[in-house]
Image (cartoon, rainbow, N blue to C red; front, side, top):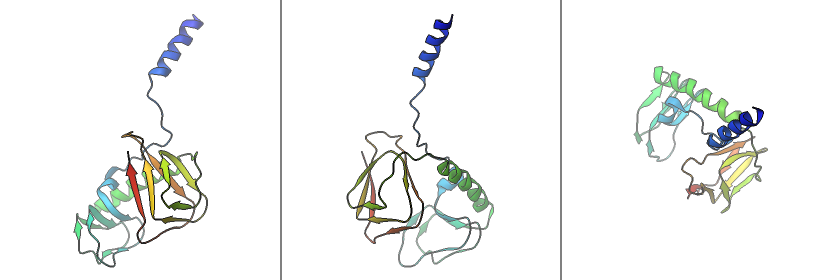
Length: 160
């Protein structure tokens, strides 16, 4: 009887899809925003073209002229977005890092899907490639335990 139960348990485990430790967070209504702040105003300087909603749950959005979306400042939509964003933040915060790159990101480096942790401040220079290895469900979580500075022409490119 024990052998049959053990075999059944083994088959059941083999049928379960592969667990990816870097699970994409549930964004809820936050997925509709390209720029959002839960605490404070958001503003724009220079010329920017944004596609998606922009807003804040505490403050105002100013100096946005080129937005293909809706501005939401301290309304019911921004309140729901703030709640959904907190859920996503907690999911990301609970993700366990298994990869630990140097604080200097980019410079043509390539990362594969996974959960990364950078201790302290970090910089992004030139291009950082994220290689999904032909997996449409690839998830990249980069947790930076400090400030992030980016060069003017830096890019993050998803490949494969």
